[in-house]
Image (cartoon, rainbow, N blue to C red):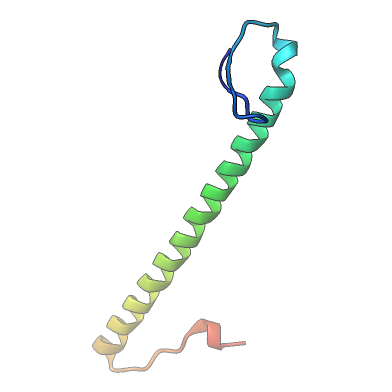
Length: 77
């Protein structure tokens, strides 16, 4: 196994059985899962912003073309 120990940050270059590596691999897997979750959340937040911008643009275009003031659904209870 070659890489970096997620607990200590030290370089690892050792040969051992899979069971011996299990604790370190489990820690690394959990870290990668957290990183993936954070990336997905960040991407979602960017998509929400882009969607809101698109809706505002389409609303403005519709108001200009029809001459009718449209209401925001977020203002409706």
